[in-house]
Image (cartoon, rainbow, N blue to C red; front, side, top):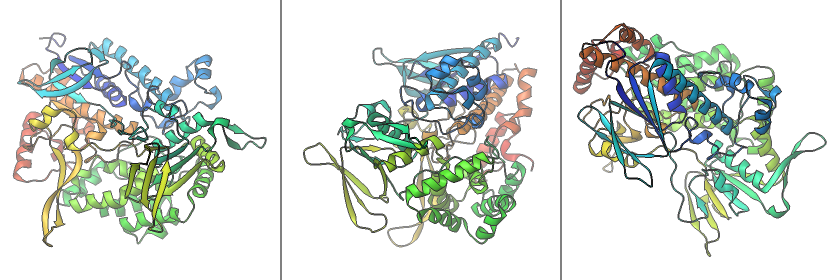
Amino acid sequence: MTKNNRKRAKLAVIGCGATAVYFLKHVVHAQIENLEITVFNASNNFGAGMPYSPKWVGPECLANIACNEIPPLNTLAQDWLLHRSDSWLADHGIARLSLGPGFIPTRAVLGEYLEAQFEELLAATVKMGITVRCVGGVNVSDITPTAEGVAVVFGNDTESSEILPFDYVVVATGHLWPGDNASPRIMSSPWPISKLQTANAKKIGLIGTSLSAVDSCLSLAHVNGSFQRDFNGRLKYIPHDVAAGFKITMHSRSGFLPTLRFYFEFPQFELFSYITRTDLHRHIAQNNNRLSLDFVFEDVVKSAIRTKSPELYDVIAPMTVEAFSDFMINSRKSNEPFELLRQDYAASFASIRDRRPIYWKEILDDVTYMLNFYTRYFEAADLLRVREHLMPLISHLVAVLPQKSCEELLALHDAGCLSVEAIGQSWKASVGDGQDSIDLVYEDHFTSKTVTRVYDLLIDCRGQKGIDFKDFPFPTLVETGMVAPAKISAEMLSDTGSYQMQDILLGGVNVDEAFHPVSAGGNTVTSLFILSAPLINGIYPYHSGLPFCNEIARIAVAALEADLAVVTSRKGLLNDDYKRCFDRHAALLVPAPIIEQDEKDIRMLHDYEEKIGGYSPHTEQL
C-alpha cells in the first residue's frame, strides 16, 4: 500500500486562535502526511483568536510583544508588515519608517498577521496532500469517547447538534470569559472592549492593574477625550466637554502598576537558556526524580546573575527565594505608583536606546518559562513556594507595558483622570441604593481601615483566570473520567491540630508532558490533546503568550507524529516517511526524563514504551 492510499488519520482542532495556527505550522514542518484535519471555530475568522480579533479589542490596544519576539511562522512578522501597501499602513496608523524587529503592533494588526499566516499554512497543507476543513460559526458543546477514538458534538443557534468521529482531538479553545454580572453596573470582564465605548459612566473603578486593565483604561480614555502633544512635545490628555468628572481608579492587591518593556538580550524564549537540558535532567535523576526549587534558584538564577550582573549578585548572594522575592517587591513599594512608572519609563528608554538588557528581569523571566514545563517535578512544598512567593513577583514583572501605553497612562494621571489604590486581597462590591451606583468596600492595604468607594461602573480587569475543574467545558469527558483535576498531595495542618496528607487542587485538568489528559484512573488518553491554557493552568501556571502557544503546539505535534508512526507500524504500513519520527521524538518532546516509580507509574511507563516501540522519553540516557 502506498503512502497516498493509506488510511488517513482524522484529527479535529477545536478553536482557531494562535495555538491552532502554531499547531498547523508544526504539522507542516514535520511533514505529517495522510492526515485529515477539521478546524472548528466559534468565529468565521480563522487565526486571530480572541486576544487579537478586532471584534474583541480596540485600535488603541497594543500587543505585549515586539515583532522579533514572535515565534516564527511561515513569514516573519516584520517581513509581513514591510510588504503591506502604503495605504494599508496608513489605514492602520503605522508609519513605514517605524517598522522593524522591535516594532510593537496593535492587537488587531497582530490578528491580521495571524489570519494571513493561517491562510499561508493552509496553502502549504494543500501541497503536502493534507486535507484541512474549516468549520466556522459553530460551538463545540461536548467531546465523547468512541470505540476507535473520540467524537465531537457541535452546532449553532439555528441548527441541531451534529456529531463527527475522529482519531484525535486537539482542544485549543484559548481564552474563556464569564458572562456579565446581573447588574449593568458591574462587568465581570472588559471583553469585548467595544462594550466600554457605550458605557454611560464617568466615575469608573477597575479591579486589577494588568494589561487588560491598561487596555480598558486607554479605551475609556479615548471615548471620553483625546491625547495631544503641547508645544514642548509633552503628551497631554484633554477630556471632552461632555466628559466632565471623568475619572478612572485602578485597584490592585498592592497598588502596583505594570513595569515597562526593556531591551532583551535574547528576544525569543528558549527553554534552556541558562541551564542545559542534560544538566537539568541529571539533577532530577539525582534528586529522587524531583526538581528542587533551591537548586534552580542557587545554581541557575543566581549563577546567571553572577555572570551578567555581578553588582546585583553581591546583594542577593545570601538570599533565599522568599527573601529575594520580598526584596524585589519591597524595592518598588517605597515609591508612589506613578512616580515609579516615570522612573521605569526612563529606565526602559535608556535600556532600549543603549541596547542594554536589565539582566535579572530577563533571567528570571526565561527561567520561569522553563520551569513552567517542569512544575510537575516539584515537591508539593516547593510548588507552594513557587505559587506563594515567586509567581507574584513574576506576574508583576512580565506584564511589561509598551512605552506608548506608559506615556498615555502618565498623561491621564497628570490630567487628574487616573489614580491607583491598593485594596489587598479582601474586597466586596455591591449595588448601591437606587441601583445606579456600585459600592466597593475594602480594607486599606497600608492603614487597615475600611474604605468605601462609589462608582458608576466597576470592571473586573484581572485577566484570564484558570478554569476550575467543575467548569470544564466538555461534560462527557468529566462524567466518564477521561479527564481528572490537577492536584498534589501535601502535608497540611488539619482541624484536629495534627498534620495530615491532603489533596490540594491546583486548578484545571491533569495532563502529561505531551498534553494528553490523564484520566481519573491514571491512564493517558492519547486521542486527546489539551492545549488551552485556562484548562491546564494548574500544571502550567505561567502562560507567556505566543511563545507558550508555539511550544505546546510543537510538543503536541511531536507526540502526534510518534503515535501515528506506532499506529501505522502496528498495521504493517510503516515506511521510511514515518520511521524518521522515532529519531526525532527525543529531540522534540520536552518532558523530564524520570517519573515517580510507584506501581501505577511503572505500569504507565511500560505501556508508553510498548506504545512507541521500546523507547521512552522518561528513560532518556543522561
